[in-house]
Length: 202
Image (cartoon, rainbow, N blue to C red; front, side, top):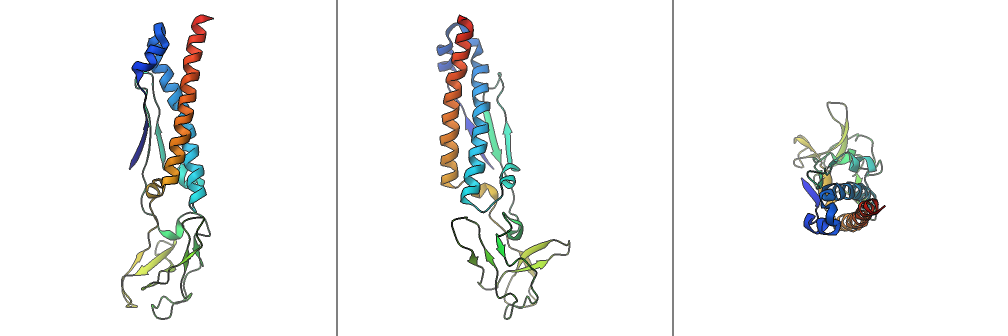
């Protein structure tokens, strides 16, 4: 699990608010909650820009604990498991997508499948030994499997995709999140302080 937390010195905010220092928790929490929405958007946009994944796959694992006046800290966490590579991301992630007619390690059909995890990369042939192959599991789902050895009678296991938290740790994704989130946080923080002071002087 990874967590991203936005915090600020409440003492500094209280000084800026002066006689209205008691409103510091409200000011910080409103700014933080607004900025995390920007952060979520940045993560979804940058992740789907870099990786061959769906927006909803990113959205589904993001959990936000919003800031309150009593605890003016907003926290976003995300955790996930390793999904089968066949069902990971967009429909063109694994090609071809039909079950094999022969899973023999010596004469598979098709000869091999290709996978694409990053958008900028071309599909990578999964032609190592033993070769992964698409097959229908006992539960009826179509998945990508691989034998544990070249023996045609060897047990099979699923081929795992990268877990989403691993993807979200990408330097480009984190940089975009930090840039957009902190920019919005500072903007909203100044706005909230101005609004409180303006209201007191009106």
